[in-house]
Image (cartoon, rainbow, N blue to C red):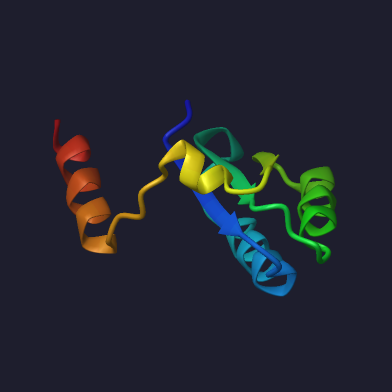
Length: 94
C-alpha cells in the first residue's frame, strides 16, 4: 500500500537530483510503500537522463514529469518539515 509520495522539484540540478534519488533508494520502506515523482522544469542539463537511469534500477515507482513551469501550474506547495511530521503523527495515531 502506498504511504508516501516524494516530490522532487528540479531545474538544471542533475547532481543534486542524482544524490537525492540515491538517498531515496536506501530507504527502509518497502518499494510498494513509496513513490518518487521528479518534477523537472524543462532542464537543459542531464537531469532527465539521471531520472531515467534511476527508473531502470529503482525498486519503487519513479515518475518524471517534464514541462516548463509545471510546479507553478500545479500549484505545488512546500511544507515545512515540522508540519509534515505533525501530519504524519496524526495519521499514525488514528
